[in-house]
Image 1: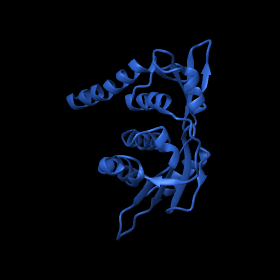
Image 2: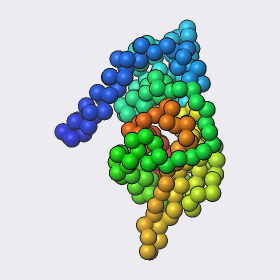
Image 3: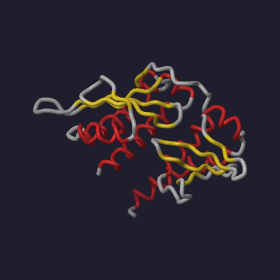
Image 4: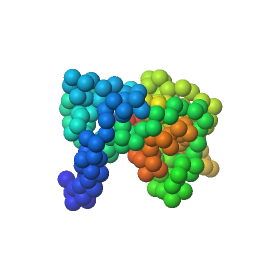
Length: 209
């Protein structure tokens, strides 16, 4: 692993360690009430479903594992799951979509979100619209009338995200839009939502290639 990769991994690890450290201060029953996730009291484990896959969160340690208890190597996803559990306010979906800029702080972090999520989505699937449709169908996502390909999917319990993609041609490159149900503001910050987009695209890419 090169020096840059080591530094990035260390940078990603610090937020996970911090959130693990404060996780014990939150009541598991309240977290369940605010998210709809399952709490296995005898095992002291919360079960969180993210894009159709279950993850185990140990209480009170805050360790996040795959469903088979194997290690998750990428820290951002683990941090995001902990932040979701701790910050959730129990607000149900509104069926009203908003853009990233409409989220508090979204204007400040928009350039980062655009490059990390929207541009990445366009570059990864701009010439593979059929493949993207196929993956979303497998995930049970709802087709919406936005873009050449548009789907709304449940990223994590109660949190719905819409990916819309316009294919490129000789004149214009592919472009995309990412929308969130308005209730997302009661679960994630603007910074968190960049990770939501990043993790979502990562899962879709892994399923595609």
